[in-house]
Length: 248
Image (cartoon, rainbow, N blue to C red; front, side, top):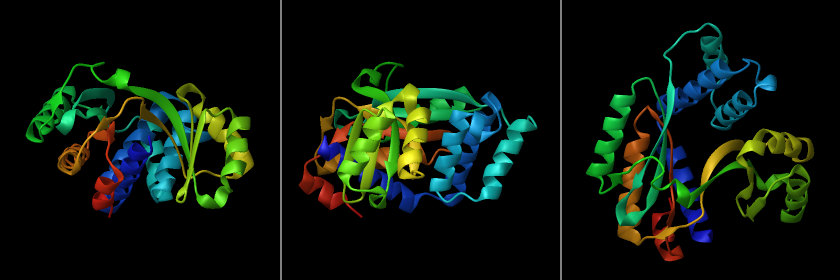
């Protein structure tokens, strides 16, 4: 799975570099508002909201923006958003899961279908690729959190299932239902994490060449440009030499 990990890192770094701040903050605000509306507006009593706020802070979202998004939920302001998952295949047969939050299901479905088509992909039915992924919690720590053994022991004590330690940091994974609990236990041992989120982790990957990876990245970027799309996950894997050519 090392190839997929490197592809995910490239995708993450590129997204950080290319994202328009206003669009990124809009998506983060939407998640915060929905989380606060569905539960308690106090992050300490609402695990989903606590994770959403952590994600916003990790992306340098101003405190005022975070508080404004929570106030929207408390005051009943803003649109009522619906969470929808789309699934399909991209160039080279790569499976993709597209997570959306929208106030207009028809608009979003039409845009997603059109984007897949324009970039050599095909939108499938719900469940058509989900079996190729596993829903998990993921907590990220910088290298400064400790060496691989220290982080591994902390993760085991916290109830995590898997740890990947590399030169750029540590990624700890756990059951999706245990994310808030594991993140809290890790924070008590290792300090505050950089990220804590729910992910779709590929259990089966699809190997693609340079051309396929390039076309796939264009599809992912086009999808992420839509304000309704919160997150896109692909099960792509490529040889190291291909990934090296894609690195920023």
